[in-house]
Amino acid sequence: MTDEKRLAFALRSADAKEPKATFQYLFEKYKPLVVFIAARYLKNKADIEDAVQETFMSFFCHAAAVRSSVRSYLGASAKNVSLRILKQRGEAKTFDPDAYPAPFDDALASEAFCELVADMKKIVSEEDVRIVLWHLVDDMTFARIARMSGKNVRTVKTKYFRALKKYKKFKEAVR
Image (cartoon, rainbow, N blue to C red):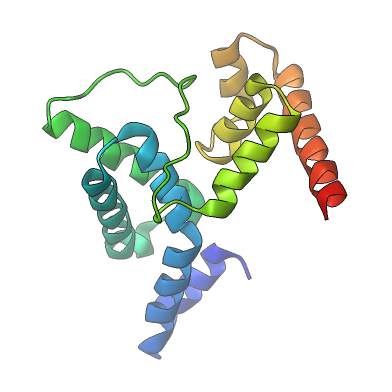
């Protein structure tokens, strides 16, 4: 069952425990992604925690109105909340998508996700890693990535799928 279907079922359920269990499941599943996105914008641990909490509170309050995928909603929300926090602090600045920081080395960060990025950097170029992160983390379309990188869409798709294929082979070889 997809997360979207599970959420819709939980919201319609007469059992009061179902929504709580579903929200707990979604929180545990997507917390590493939300932390990673917030950490790209915010440097302070307290600000990152605030952004994560606000992102999920917004999601829980507006779950019935979510029309996109859960992942897309949470990713966009984490980005917007982080930018709003920067703006409130007077630290708003343009974001350089090329400047992916080192993975946030706190217990909040997903070790598996950080390991994935580090492994990918070992086997594919920085540009390919950036394309994969833009598509998977920032939920960008291949067309938008192509415009940003100055490449054509076919090249971007090829780099993306080759990077994933190389990563899959790498992980199989390591096992």
